[in-house]
Structures are given as structure tokens and as C-alpha cells.
Image (cartoon, rainbow, N blue to C red):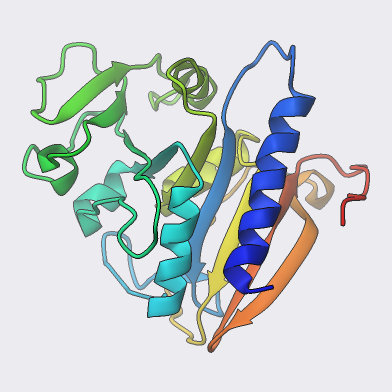
Length: 247
């Protein structure tokens, strides 16, 4: 079985199991997959706001395959400002996921490619009820949390009501950290590139005082892709999580 087939079969099963286990749960939300590339020392870039390409062509193709397996793809405003991404499936066969930007202060430029797309209207999750409209974007006002950022649990409920059952998070670091801190990331697919950067890490402080309460990866899998290592698994937020018995 190829790497692409291996990851797809695993992820589709994880998504189905997640929703079957949550039937009747009062908090209906999407299954959330974190996916990003990092160096061997855990860096995703040399400094905040800088773009560093870490994935190979094969790794990028795998990322686009993952996009095709999700209803929506979410990035933070920092990623939009630094990379001006398209968030489409260009290197794989499949439908483009719904682009979503987490932008509490509504800083997304009207000139960004996500706002200029002719194919999809970008959803912008923001706390700014009186912000100016952006052509090509739909503003979705979400209550703020104690720090003035978009309340992630409420945002996930809104996305679920809008039909997003499978959500992929591509970054940046603040968004990845926020989803882990909130216990909202359910799976992770990590590309480890054969390079040391000594730069800016993908994960910031999670607020845990006990390592037993930190997010843990279960059902751990890994494969080599060229000179890269692809690691993926389910995320668990309790120390006494039952072992996975699937094969």
C-alpha cells in the first residue's frame, strides 16, 4: 500500500469513528486534523511572518491529497499575510475544501488571493461585527474569548451548522497552538524535513503544568517519503486513554 493510500484509509476511518462516537453529544463540531511541515528541530520558519518551504514536491502533493479529504481548510490571518495562500487542491484529484480564515481583528487584505478567488467565497471568522465587508469573503461574527480572540468552541459549532464535518488546520503556529490548548485537534499529520533551522516552532506554550495532561499521539504511524519522514496519529487529551484496537 502506498503512503497516500495508507494515510487516506486511516484518516477516513478516524473521521467516521469520531462522528459515530459523538452522536447525541451536546457539542457538535467537526473532526479536526492538524497538518504542517517542520524541520528536524521543530521549526516551521526562521521567524514569524517569514515563508520557508520545507515540503518536497511529493510532500506538497500529500498535503493537497489531505485537503481533498476535508470539507474545510482553516488558517490564521498570520498565514494569509505571510504566504497569501490559495488553499486549493492543485496537486491532487478532488474537490477544493471551503477556505476559512481565523481573523479576530479583521485584517485580511481585500487583495489577498483568498478574497480574489473566482471559485469559492472565503469564510472569515472574526469578532468584528462592524468591520468593512471584503469582496469575495463572507464575514462570520463569532463571540470573543477572554483574550479577545475568536472563541474556538463556538466557531467550531458554527462551522458544523454550516456543513463542515471534516476540518483541516494548516497553521500558523498561533492557530495550531490554540487548537491544541482548547483540546479541539483530533488528529495530526506531520512532515519532518531533513534540515535544521533553529527558528520558530509550530507549538507554543499550552498552559499545562503536568506533562500527563499534555496532548498525546496515539495510534502512531510513520513512513518515509523521499528524505522526509511523515508521522501521523490520533490526538488524546487524557492520560488514561484506552489503546486503539483498530488494525
